[in-house]
Length: 168
Image (tube, rainbow, N blue to C red; front, top):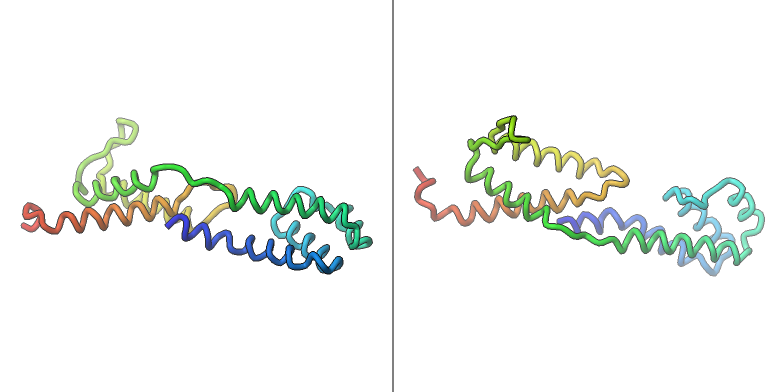
């Protein structure tokens, strides 16, 4: 689920980078594409004096190649980020626990007792809220947590169908 949403979130940068690459044969269009990319993604080299200079000399290949190199490294760093962790699986275990033992107390910091069902609902709501909000710089795979919770819940519901103790 995380990779599905990640590909959706990264599709604008892929489209914009492709547009920059397609404009390389047209000096004016290439300069405009570089500046548009820099403005949209707030890159560090995007400064007023450089913009003025590039607009006056769009055919300056030395500067445009340097900017393209900067954009390429930014693009590759955004696309080649690793997703490592087991938090989705842990969230699946939490969802299964909430389903099987909803009224069990869980002590937060060993002091505050909270029923598992309320903790699970609050935590799942928290993850959904921040996944939809999608704030910049947030490197938490929230959709992996949500997907893990859904899969864990589906697995325990499927496995629990034959459990005769819960049918009464």
